[in-house]
Image (cartoon, rainbow, N blue to C red):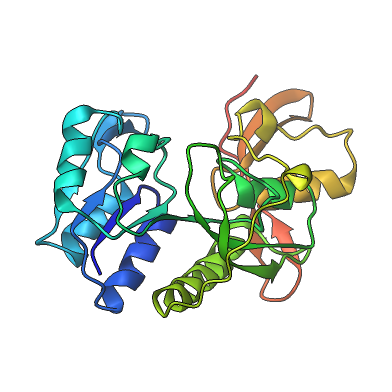
Length: 268
């Protein structure tokens, strides 16, 4: 079995770690180019690149600026992989690239498709107050998360669950589904496109707390963005306007969650 792995964020790096623990060989690891990060805009490798150097030191790491680059596509074609395993890579793969695997290009998507197609399915599900979501292994095509479902499993999303908690739960389910997939336990089915909903990337303005909104919607916004990147809001304290940049939940050691009350925002 010959595999090429595509991924970028920390969630992808954890799936890569699982593959390493299972002694799954990889031909190449594809991730986004190093990018400026933080206030100092320091050039920083992706979590997948950092993990790959430790977990798969002999495997080539590829970082095309554009996954449609002809040289990159030819390099992947020369590997003649059986499968792509794609987890939050961050670029749309062309049909030319998707046609390379001898068997399947497989994507791990962190929602119960066809609900929440797109870049931020976990956060959007929590923002909408969903009581359950899930993980889907799907065959990739050139459309956004519209390929055939290969395997999927639901996960409960109780009201106290934060993004960090949900991410951890979906990571475990993703690994279990990958194990079943490698064992040949595929339950292929078409998606019902009439039931599709979408989860676009969350903007800075969408992270803003609107204080006249319902308590439930504010609760859902904060937990959907906790621990990162955090919701933000403006308040007035003793006549002085302040901006809090990252409202987030802190565990209270029980089913209850407390909103962080430390302030590090600037005066407005």
